[in-house]
Image (cartoon, rainbow, N blue to C red; front, side, top):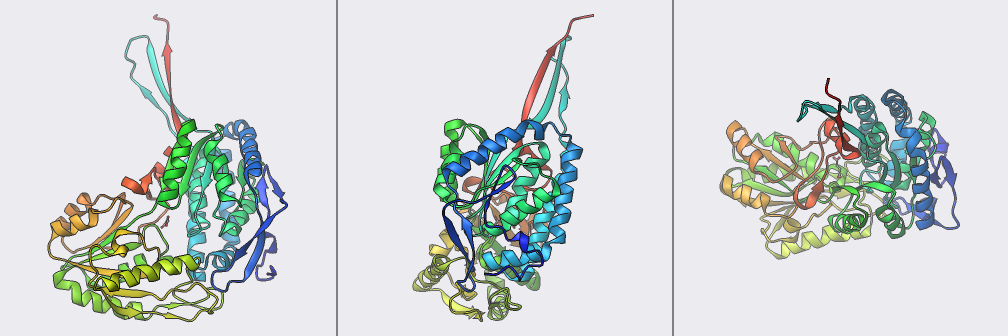
Length: 487
Ligand code: SIN
C-alpha cells in the first residue's frame, strides 16, 4: 500500500528499531488491514538474535539514561507527547488501518496514548524516597527509589499505541531503558511511536522495538538475565506462561491479563445511564477490550425495560471499514475472533437464550466483521458467561437480589473490571466493596484514564498502570542504613 494517505509518510516504518537505528532483516511478514484483508506493509521479521541485540542496546544505554536528571527525562517525554499530538491524525489512520477501530476511536486512543507521556513526564520529578527514624542513636535509615533496570514489554493488538506508552513512559520517566515487542498484528503504531520518540530526543538504545517471531522474541525477553522487569498485557494463558519463565531469573513482573467483567443493573438504576454505559463498555473497540462488560446481570424488576432500551441501541450499530467513512464499529482483528463470537452466540442459543437485536455490517466481505448482538435469557453456565468473548456480543442474565448479584459477579477466576448501576448510595458502597475486582465503574461504563490506576486482581494479574501508582512497578526500593560515630 502506498503511504500517500499519511501527511507524514515517514511515520510508516517497516524495520525494527534497535540502538537508535532502523534495522532490516532477511525476512518480512505482511501486516493486514482487518477491514479489507489488504496488505498494509511488509514488516521486518525479527527473532531471537535481534531481540538479544535490543537487550544489549538497552543494557548499554542504561547507565547514562538513569544518570540523567528527572527534569531532563521529563523534557523529552513532554516533547514526545507534543509530537504525538502533532501527528495525531496520521497515527489514528495508521491505527485504524492495522487494527480496525473506527477513526473516531483511533483518534481517542492516540490522545489516550499521548496522555501517559505527559502524565509520567510530570511524575518523573516526584519519585520521592523517605527517611525512617533510626532504631538506634547512631543509626540513620534512608530509603531511595531507583530504576529497576532494563525493562521488557510485550503489548497487545487491541490498543496498539496506548498500551505502549502506559508502560514505556513510566519506565523512561524513572530512568529505565526498554525493549518492546508489540503485537505482530499491529506493529505500525509502535514503530511510528518509536520514530517520534527518537525525534523527541530519546537517546539511542533507551527505547528499542523488535517485531516478528513472537515465541523466539518472548524467550529472550523472559530469559535474558539482564532484563530486570517484564511487563505484559495480553491473554491470561500466555501471561501465565511468560511469568513462569521470568521466575528462572527472578524478574519483577507485571501482568494485565484477561477479564470477565460483570455489568450489574439494579432495579433502581437510571435506565438511560445504564444503557449508555452498556453501549460504551460493551461495544468500545467492537468489544475487544479487557475491561469490556462480558456478562450483564440485570435485576428482575428492570430486566424487560433495560433489554428493550438496549435492543434499540444495539440494532442501530453499524460495523464498517473505519477508513472508508463513519461507522460505529470496526472489524474484529481476525477470522478466529469472529468465529469465537459466533461460537459463544450459538452456545448461548442452544442453552435457551434468544437473540433480541442485531446490528448491521456495511464493511466489505473480505473484512472480519461481526454483527453487534444482544441476547436475553442467557443461562449462567453459557460459554459467554464463563469465558471472555472479546467481541460485540452482549448477554443478559436475570437476578433477584443483591447477594445473588454479588455471588454471580464474583464467580470467576478473573478480577479486572466490574460495573454497577444503582441510585442507592448505600448499595453502591456495599456492592463496590464486595466486588472482587481491581476496578469498579459506578454508574459509568468508562473507567480508563491516565490519572487512575489500571489493573486487576486474581487471575487478571497484578501491578498497576497509569496514575501515581504506575511508577511503582519500575522502581526498586533501596534501604541505606548508616552507622554514624557518636558525638
Ligand atoms: C485493555 O483492554 O487492556 C485496555 C483498555 C483500556 O485501557 O481501557
